[in-house]
Length: 134
Image (cartoon, rainbow, N blue to C red; front, side):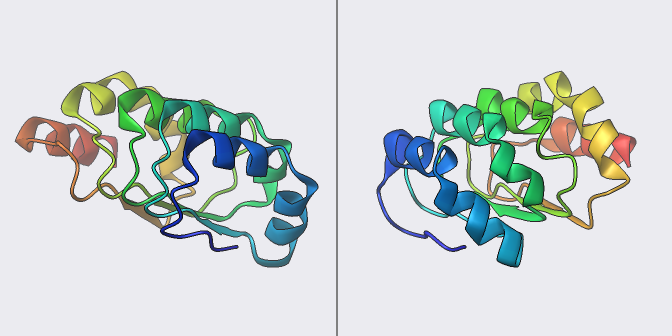
């Protein structure tokens, strides 16, 4: 399911997260792309709470505004335990977010084939934390 470059924001992604459409679409493809949609923390929280996300294998939230809190919300989700590809390119994630979510990341690393955090606000410290989890 692709909904890229639509400024739906938190309200739109929250409505999608609660709709039966998302569940139907994810059952057929297992992929949600919501790149460049002006989604922030409330949208990430809504996705994380959506039971439909249990069918999601690939989540691409590139170029949004999730920040550290949205990042952690997605990792804490009881519905996103089966994802294999996690793209959060350019989402204002910081070293502090990596540090705070370290144990959450650790629980997902064995299943992930791809974690893309490029273009965020990570320094060598944050990248070293990621390497230590692997």
